[in-house]
Length: 281
Image (cartoon, rainbow, N blue to C red; front, side, top):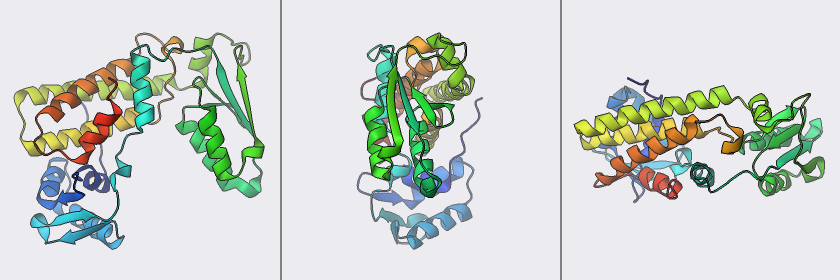
């Protein structure tokens, strides 16, 4: 039996948001209970969300209805572009062109916040540090990096380079370079965990589940998928050990998600968000 993912109570509330912007409190408490959350934990979370102005509450207890004041799906929404690109790679639709994309920056200490934000953006986009202030990606992310650098006001401190003959020390073989620069073992382990959870989930679906159990499983599966994919640099298959567990895990996720989606009469917005992300699969 695969380990169940830990899901914050706040994320659960967002995950159960319906297309009409509401969350049924009875459903929320039922799913939370299956995830091991106490009623008190849920009540405190709802109270905080209402106090923050993120939701309004109509009614009390399990008969209440929460209504989102603004779009509250950002916490659980997948990065659609990132996920679609992963499935395109899995299908051989995004082969590597042999180019390394390099980004060098020397942002002054006075702009430390912007420097840290730029670094986080690079990591989120799948780039990795080669040495201090120099990051590399195997994917064409220059436009995204430039847009973020301009937004942060540090574009003058960033250099953009490409290379087809990158060498780090004595290593110049692309596949060996990828293994040296990115933590492939950690990335693979997260995908293997996703695959195990998807297999277990598929078996549960075959045995039959109630609607609340299906919702609970959907939230857990989405959380596990997010953990596997963030961060994943989405290195081209040409640079990865084969067979790579990422493509296998994404296939199992898609199959399980499709089965979950098929028999849900009133699915939360979570389903549509992931349907949109994996639509190329």
